[in-house]
Length: 254
Ligand code: G
Ligand code: G
Ligand code: MN
Ligand code: NA
View 1: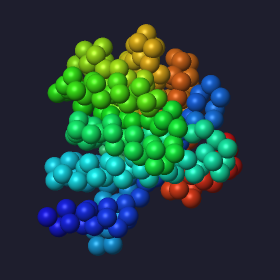
View 2 (view 1 turned 180 degrees about the horizontal axis):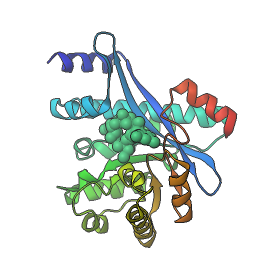
View 3 (view 1 turned 45 degrees about the vertical axis):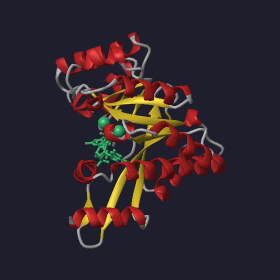
């Protein structure tokens, strides 16, 4: 209960923070967008990682309010960066499967788009592969409506769920994000390269773009490049950055 009260207060008092991790286009070696990642610092409890408080927020019912906050904040920030620096960066937000399955989700997204002025083509929603476990026709319909608005839909943590291939057939997504566990296996295992190569081929056969997550080593990057992966994210390029640090990054490199 203490944690719930604290999280609720942090949300209401705007004390949650978003960090942004750049996504790099391997064709041009430029930053083409960023993933917004929640950070929560509590004066008494210290830094609480999202791995801990997101599942908690899903259990206690705060996840929808958090999702709206993240969407609004990230959209407004992306608009500011794009206008100030004459860019077209696409911002990605993580949305809980619980939230996206809520009635009125698409309407809420429409309102945030109107309110912040973000071009829906510069907005991306990441949903985990787990969302598909007990998917419904309603969820598929929601995803179709979001895509009709111009929003990009990404399948996060790809490869970690169950029956991925079966779900992939049914889900109208744009981007497949290969989980970092597979990137970690690239070097030095030969089978790791085979897996990555197969996942990239699969994505392309289904007309999906591919993002590899958690790229830390140049050797991993080289293999990904060689096998036609379009986009990467990871510590090799940058960890998630505060607003100030991300601003410095785009001022200096984009
Ligand atoms: O940033 P970090 O690696 O600590 O994130 C850990 C996990 O928390 C990731 O799986 C990420 O998807 C999730 N996460 C981070 N920010 C958000 C958010 O704003 N909303 C949701 N639903 N999950 C998030
Ligand atoms: O599950 P999701 O992809 O939304 O979570 C992204 C998480 O991965 C973030 O918490 C981010 O901090 C973390 N992350 C990003 N790049 C790297 C990386 O290169 N290595 C590792 N180990 N974690 C990373
Ligand atoms: Mn993600
Ligand atoms: Na992921």
